[in-house]
Length: 618
Ligand SMILES: *Cc1c(COP(=O)(O)O)cnc(C)c1O
Image (cartoon, rainbow, N blue to C red):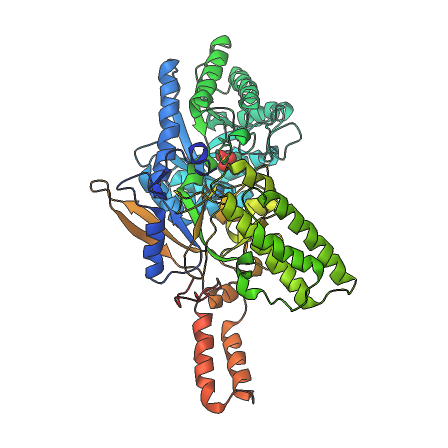
């Protein structure tokens, strides 16, 4: 896998050229050059890069596919979409998204009061707002205020008690009213790890009996004309299109039946989100079995058929895809700090005049290994190591012997890999599991890839350069948290190979792609690692050059502590007092130590290690 499966996951957003990952837009800068530019300006540790042009690309793709399908089937309804704020609620995402999609009927979806406030402040003019999730009276009143401000807002109710509150608020606040949507509870369900949003036992939505009751309530309270939308959402990352087709048939029939019951203004079917992102780097493990064209074609065709059969108008279609719109816009870049076996070089070997026989044998294997014997000797050496470790446990060899064992085995592994470098890759694959290298990354998986931790969701990972050289080390990745879950283990089903580098003299960066959906929102400050330093790369449309915008540095240690409600003034005071009282630090050095402390408090908590050879910071 020398191209790291880029054809499966990158959608031509990124390409490999001259051995580097490049942005396939504008004048096609290499990611490594963008990273180096930022590091020269002093930004260290992990970086999160946003690409606003990719936000626009995804929204345009959805609209153009649906518009094509509408044309193809001579469909009479219109297509509209909203972005569900919960997927990425950060201003450096939401504001550029709205700016980039002004030409479209593209609004925002809110699921809480705070999200609704964002939607009311930033939705483009004439673009829709939809509101889902559980609502109290205050949130419903907020929806009425939005309607009075002129927003095209639909409150989708999740249960009959919400409808009762709407009726109450309508009486109190008067017209104009927001539009009303009903979330329907389907008996069909989604598939995959996120498929908990649909089905008869789902958390959300009205049963058939409740729908009938809702129509009756709306009618009685003269609000039926406000009822314009039905909504369903079968779950995120829909991998298979079959359950969606089933859900569409069910929803289409509910739409038609509700109209027949008198809901004459019902003219929108909101199919929720769930469009899947292809995260895979391996042909055999693709995440979805449909294209966007197939998806839009199925939606339009199914609703058209039902409308025809039931002699009702073809409804407008709403979509609330979040993951599909936002995943590709953000890339996490992490410097590699260390390769764990790196310290095992010949200098670390301290052989005695007389070594245990198995250590002598390891030495012999190391000195005589060649291409023909490589695999056999490797296996022998691993076996010897097992025996030597047992001998240590039984007290027969000492710590120096044990250290020599470790060093020799690592030297043999490295030699084998070097010898086999130009041979058939399958020879290396055979030994990969036994000889993996651990790469220590200057980032936190809990903060930046929480779905890996929580759901074992894999994100495409690729080194930013050296892609014209074959990677030879089977790799497991470790973050800098003190948590053993902060590891992406080597998996022989999805093997990751990286380059054998000397971090004392070379820089090496890994990019994690498709991290723009849910990861920042769900990321947590385990070990108090904050969000990485982030910025947007914005291209000039005429010249294709890029500018860095919206730079937001990783939080300083003091800011992080302040967010936790520590009294940071008190912390500073205590540190100073303890320093003053210390008898270990000479009086004339105290000022300098205090200065060092203050500098640290004003930096972020990611590592700033020093290159041994160059004295550079990482
Ligand atoms: C979460 C959610 C979405 C977004 O789902 P994606 O899988 O990100 O497209 C859309 N609608 C509702 C109601 C949601 O809860």
